[in-house]
View 1 (tube, rainbow, N blue to C red):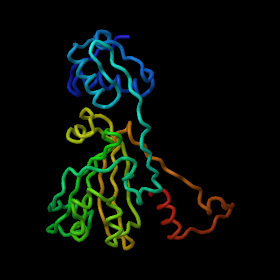
View 2 (tube, one colour):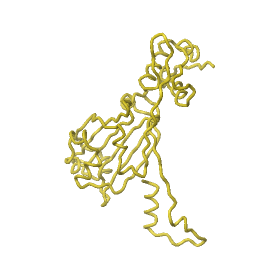
View 3 (cartoon, helix red, strand yellow):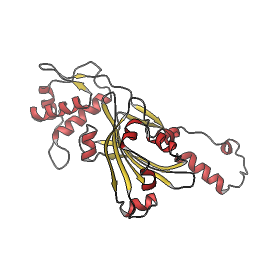
View 4 (cartoon, one colour):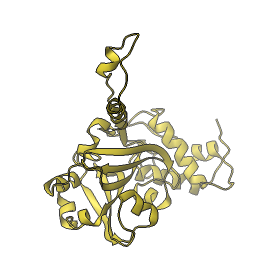
Length: 270
């Protein structure tokens, strides 16, 4: 079936051809080791130029989904299973530092926080905040980009060398900073151009976007994390359990207390 692609405002034609083929590959329309349709057949299907088709195939190859060789149709490659992180272990693991995902530091610098960041981290706007960005790869393919901002009294205890060798959570623990709670938001979002390039995605492609504010036992912010993950290489698992109170529920439930509300909130927020 032909798919006529127009060129209004929005992603370029090659990106839309890439998106269509990627979705079909990931939904197993093409078998692993099997061939994609020829460039000529793709031209006829999408009613685009050979240059557009080849650019889309280049993006699929960069994403590790196909392999191309001269004179033959592209071949679908096997895909590693997506990394799965359990939200119940998220505070301890912070995006699974292991699993062949040693981070590469992209930037390590001090900034003056804008008003909203200063309020979030509960710091003076004239103080300094350490801003670290990192890229994680798995089996040679990019999985996630992270941006971490820390108050000055914590950032002073970090070093670029340590962050290149050790897990962030391990460094914090060794300095006496233990994460006790977190506020977290996980959503779907279009990839900004800069992050899309780092993750080998077209600008605007879907990603998982995570925001996490971690606090110590006194409720003081330890760090603010923003992470962007490729949807096809990362999964987030939530482990739920029924509380004892729900198991023992009767017609006349006991009166709730403020402590009950706090525990229930943490059960579903962390």
